[in-house]
Image (cartoon, rainbow, N blue to C red; front, side, top):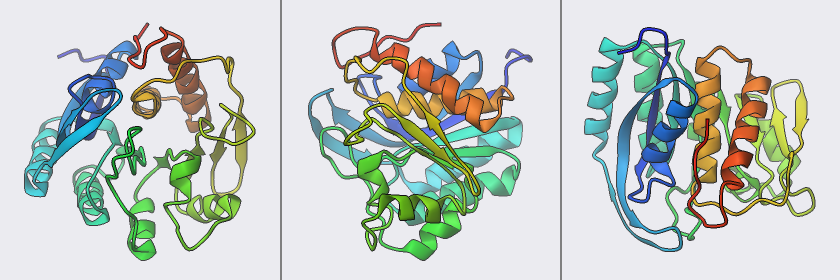
Length: 251
């Protein structure tokens, strides 16, 4: 294996189209010159337009896989995708931290698919906060952020509450008035990330591409704001790559 590329890991679902999940993540990792590993949290049967079935991976198998990889390799950053429950997510996050406390973790908060299949429902705020304290960044969109705290309807309040525990990149793809404008919130500050082009094409798995690009950039030593800004540019090129819902990756 190459000694000059940092190791990164995607813990996410398997999409047979390779538009989302671990296949999309590994493609993104390769374009960013990091070496990507992958652990499946689920096998899915889907197309870019329809979600048919999911088969979750047994948690013990996932935890054993994490232990095996972290015992042998120094993994600098991890992207976590779909999980079936907060308990499952908590076990994954704490297993990573047990083996490598300094490894950076990005959770792409995929609560449902673009075809409206629900993956995860957040029912316990105490458990969520405990998990977020171990995570470096979450990447919800405007539809997902309100599902992270159903007791509130004020998005700004929710974001500020969550960003007390980890950074939040609030994605603007579903923003009602500022389409494509992302906001990065840290504990004390926030940053506005404007799009370079708003005339993009919808893509299956674009959130996966963005979060894995951020992971690759962080593993390469970029600070959080720069890592998010560069990942945004990469994802925009992905969205512009063709007119279908399955995008192309470019160097």
